[in-house]
Length: 317
Ligand code: G4P
Image (cartoon, rainbow, N blue to C red; front, side, top):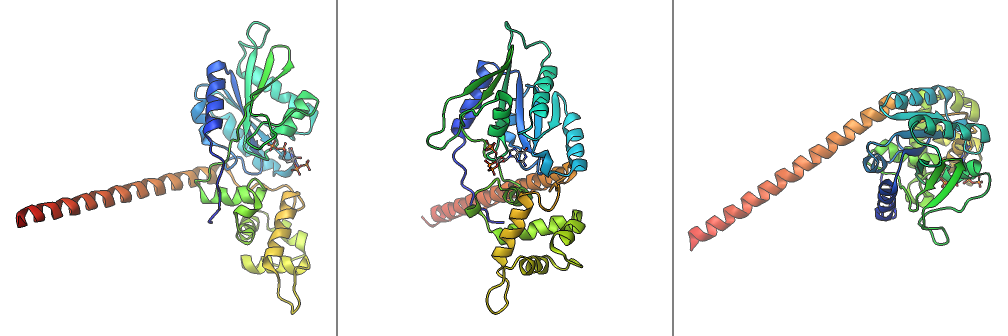
């Protein structure tokens, strides 16, 4: 899908993370969207913090499929120096579980002489401000790229010997995988002018038909599910997205479906599994390798053509 995605440049974020690593960092918290954990992750963070224990926090679990959340937790918990928990950012008790998990990841730190230094990162809209506010017990200032938002690192003392750092700059999602683009758009992580809502809705329908067909049928009273575009049309009919003459306004139907999904009105739905994500990553890497090989071959052919021309020209002389 062509996503007109122009994330703000990541250099300032990269630098802020590097600065924190250099100043001292014991645990990295990556906040993920439990509905799309793989797509809401940013590989740059892992690359900049290698060797540091990592806590994956699957937020918005109230909107995600509990069985799939368990699968993702098991997937992350099986990785070295990694722990994973799921929570709703607004809930006080689960948010406190995060402190316990960090302490377990760095057991040698966490007193006055050796405070536990934890950095929290996540793509926009994943719930970072909500979680920090819950942990801190008040409304904390947002860090980010927009005007009026602090560009300085913020430090919160969550309890004795426990420092939480919120880095400035935006950790934009990286859309190297087509499916991730769709999932990020469906979840609301990407600004709505950046993608075609109808296309995203059709992809969402494809996922729902495959994994949660009965939810789709129940929500829109559909006796059966036909082709994806006819399902979208039927949703439009149910939601009164018709214009005079009877035709369905497909973009209105798409908007209705996306709003319903984001609000959890279709139930708790996860868009991707760890296995699917691994396969998409492999495919994307292979496609990238193929592209690099093609470019290299084209460059070599071009060089040969030019050197052929040169020797022909010197033969002419
Ligand atoms: P950010 O700092 O990472 O950009 O995200 P922020 O906390 O601003 O949260 C983005 C949206 O996600 C907010 O909704 C917030 O309420 C919602 N949210 C955060 N955590 C959870 C969660 O665990 N479950 C659910 N269901 N929603 C969550 P909003 O509609 O944009 O704002 P508001 O109407 O809540 O103010």
